[in-house]
Image (cartoon, rainbow, N blue to C red; front, side, top):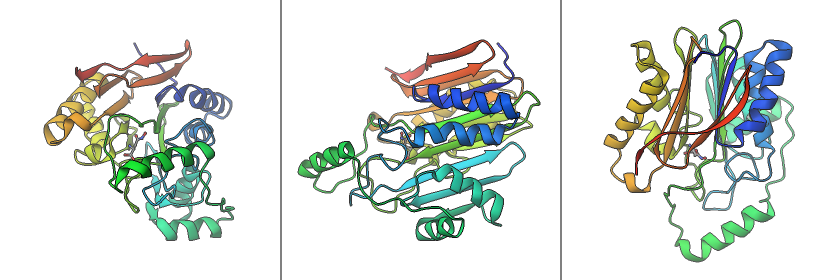
Length: 292
Ligand code: SD4
């Protein structure tokens, strides 16, 4: 099965995000605008507790966001540990386009946002996030938790009709993480990697486990060596399982396509799904997985 154009996103909320991205791609032909505007839908989705300012906070009760964006020619930008920004994906794009850097974090990223004319949002948890945070505090003993739930970061990768590629990834990260923790999503090569000569990959799940194996970069390099997107995702999951000791507490999933427009996905365990949009329409597909 080969599709061009093709847009893939992680999880069920990838469907409305893909719809938007598809619309932008078809009307403008621009993959970068498509992946930016696509995930902006999720950044505003009040029902999503892992993306955007309505996401679950760190253990101090502060939502901190991570995002990255990448083009198939190697251009990329990211922001990490950023506060009060409604659309971290757009800020990541500004880092790519308006600075000589790839990554800005924390207070520096916030300062940059102000310079770029962004309005800072009030730092206030959504009612639902606040309720969950208060509950967590009762039993947590302030310990960050690692578990196999609560992952619904959006990673999106798009292949344009002309073979151009781009990807985006945005998250509020692991719930109740330590203050200052970065996940895989803002790290180029971990949460996202795109190379027009080969293909693209993005990740969701426990960021630490994904960073440890440079997950998205690994998948693209495996495809470069001739593996299909499916085989490459499977190999990355095998690697992830072999390099992470606490695997019983870990869920992670990958999606990928190659420049021919073939795609694949694989996860550590059951429960991961992803949205695929091409000319025939859109499907939500249950990913295959390794551990039962
Ligand atoms: C992280 N990969 O920060 C992200 C978490 C995730 O849905 O996927 N959440 O580790």
